[in-house]
Structure formats: structure tokens, C-alpha cells
Length: 314
Image (tube, rainbow, N blue to C red; front, side, top):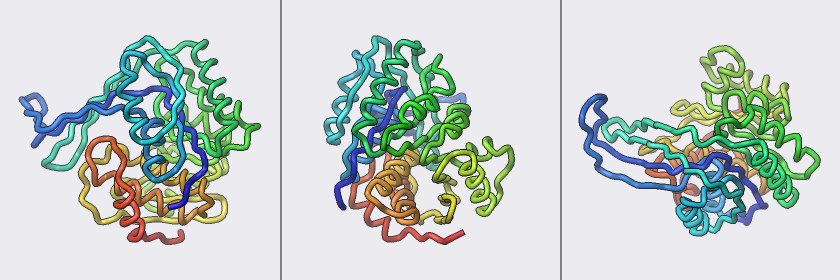
């Protein structure tokens, strides 16, 4: 695969992801842990590492706790991903993810993180704008720390509007709604997020396509919608495609959305068209579902699945 352009990701709320596996989750009872691991996480970091795994050039910027930095730096260096942090002396949040082997379902318990102040946010905006001047694509993804204004992603999008990089926004709730008005190039809601934005139930693929087009009219250029076990949809103002789910053994859905964002962004940055970049996103998300933990799938699995992705114009 060819070398991709520089993609900068932003991770405002990093996490230590504690993944455990149990034979069958028993609520209110004793659960014996069969496997346990700790990973450096946060959506922005996950996207950057996944881009590097695809052979792309990525860097991650964000807030970082000095005490737990080694775990994060080790993961980034191992993947060949550059990084630039604003350091904080606050504990990193921990997200607990419980994988139930009996049904292949992950139950998540995510901490909110530690509050951030206006001075820290101003420094972060300055850093992001500086890095955006050297990037081809800027990815804003994941939750924001407590006390961070809901329109912060929108502020960043407006701050970099004069730069040449294209901007990707992968958020939910108010940060996503506020951000769309700031005209991101690509957004990736799931079905629930899209329903929340449009205020209606989206029962079939044409309904999802039409809802995506509403967000395009509202400011986004490309909308990719992940539908879980029902596949995925992508649309711009001219065309739209649907991809049914691949027939794979799902071991965990953790990180699938980040893997999709990484491959979509990489594909577009490499000059791929809407349909081909979409196929890359679906393949990488599916490959991620075949793995446990937060490490991205290998290139071999991605390229194998890429040959099996089917798309249809809708």
C-alpha cells in the first residue's frame, strides 16, 4: 500500500482501557476474570495508531498525564506514530470494558476524566492550529474532558478554517451538533447518533441515506454512518453507497469505529474516491471486530477483507 499524507489526530481525553474477559457476565454475582489487559487509549490516539498500522503517516496531539505517560508513549513509539502533548498533573481516567465470551458482547464503564480549564484549552487550540499547518487532514475525535465547552470542536474547526487541511469530526451529542455547523469535511455518526441529530427513527437504508444528506445540507461534506450488524452507509452531495456487513467472527466491537475513521481518512488522503475509501473503512472496521483489545488489526487481515467488501449505490 502506498504511503499516505500526514494526518494529525486530536485526543483531548486519553484513557487507560482495562479490558477483561469473562465466560458469561453475571450481574449482581461473582464473575471470574479469564483474561485481563491494560492499553493506552482514547479515540484520537486509537485513530492515529490505526493509521500508522495501515502504513500511513500519523501524529497524535492532546492532553497527557505525566504519571501515566509511559504507557501511552510506548504504544505510540511501537506503532511509529509521532506525538506532541500538553502535560497535565492529573490522573488519567480508566475505562473498564468487560467482554462476555458467551455472547461476544462488550459492556463498557467509562470514566469522564478530569476537568480542563480555559487556559489549558487555549494552549491546546494553539497547538492544534500549529500542527494543522503541516497536516493534510486533521481528525477531531472522542469525548472531551469535563468543563470543556460543548462547542470546543466547533471552535477548533473555525480556528483552522484558513489552513489547507481537511477536517474530520467523530463525536456525539452536543459537540457533534455544534461541530457540523462549523463545516467539517467528514463526520462519522452511528445510527443512534444520526437519529438523535435528525429527531426520528431511521428504519431502513434509504432513510439513513436521506438523514445523512440532511447533515450535508447542514454543513458536512461527507457523512459515513456505521450501522453495526446492519453494515454501513456513506454519502456526499452527489452519490451514496451501502455496504452490507461482512461474514466474520466478531470477537469484540471495541475500536471498530476508530478503525473505520482511520481507514476512511487514509483512503481519502491518498486520493481515493468515495466508494473506494468507504470500502477501506468497512474492511478495517471489520478486521478490528475480529481482534480483542485496542491494538489495530494487521495489514494482512485488512487487505484480505478489503477484497470481500461489496458496495451498492443507493
